Image 1 (spheres, rainbow, N blue to C red):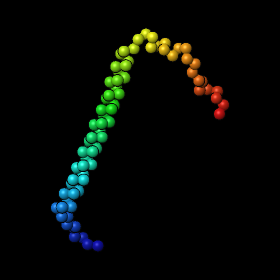
Image 2: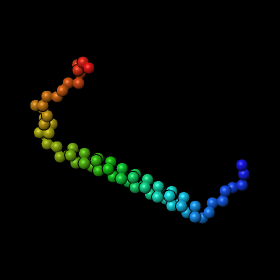
Image 3: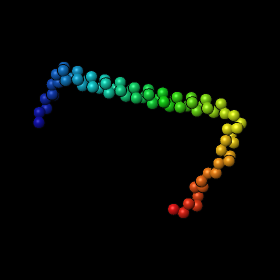
Length: 73
């Protein structure tokens, strides 16, 4: 086991730097995409909420929904 530091050639350092730069930009891109999807969904929900009519409150009044209780499984 040698205590001497390993010498890294400029070529290897350039490859490592390039790889880290690509990973960093990819991470930034994914974060921007996720933020865009979240903001878009929030804006859409707010738009839909403001455009409700009184009939929307009773839209499913006649539908029978399955009960979650008493299934017996």
